[in-house]
Image 1 (cartoon, rainbow, N blue to C red):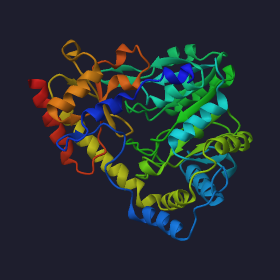
Image 2: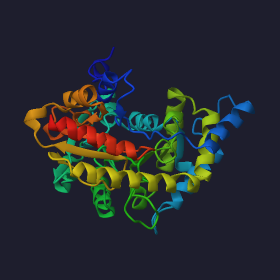
Image 3: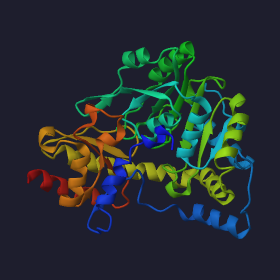
Image 4: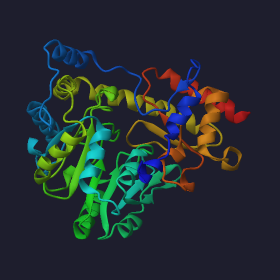
Length: 395
């Protein structure tokens, strides 16, 4: 077994979930998904495809009609003056995780330097490490519970030696989101250094600020088609399709044929019946995403004030995503956030994700922090969870 694989850490979120397995009394907010089932018309599209016998291989890059639909969808979200996105820039993947791994495989050699903005979903730092890259982190800094980027620190970290910059915005777990101006500064800097950008924008539509196009700022709004930019997306979050494993990449047109070769050697293609479901989801996005975003905003606006009212809890309102990332102020009392999360499961029946799951260790910035996924179909569960946290803190 390769040493890079042996060095991989077990998912801390899974460790917490394992502590609650078999307990029906635990309120589970640890995983990054809604507890709402995929809409019926999406499921029916997959069932119809199976009934029609669509169980064979298809094009490595995805069904042409799905690629066209994704291109139209993505172009429709762009700001005024942005370059339109054609199907020749789209690769359909077997999930957002697969999309990100494909991008890293395409760009990173062993020994390359990769810079990642953290806290971040751990796969984003593990994937280049698996490829043998040297991963350097630039941490967001919490200011009154709100995480912020030190742009000077980031630009200083990205040099001509940096092969790849990885940024997830809106961010999991913090909800931090890049501004359009920040994206332009980062893109201009990476053009000068020759650095590729891998932008994880899977939470693009789960954005709660008012914008003309109903989504968070995207690097696709400011980049040209041949910029060294790959953007990863997923059907999981905005279409309630986490278990379907369907995603896509947007890349320079010259890179797409080579990405098709990588897809061949990874998965060959995404299943046709899953792609049919994705096609219907994209075509009927107005029947899914706006309602979902409205509900998530209600969830956020319910949970955050309740948490802010709990003594000893520090939390700011996230601009995007589906998470409250909050800090327990008495860190000496609680110590390691993984152990704190495990204790909350056992002692309070509350399932949250530990903050240090989202940092490359050692990472003192993450200690005392916990992530709460507020994508709950029943909003009342959020209040019940806060009450359990309040009682536990009072012990």
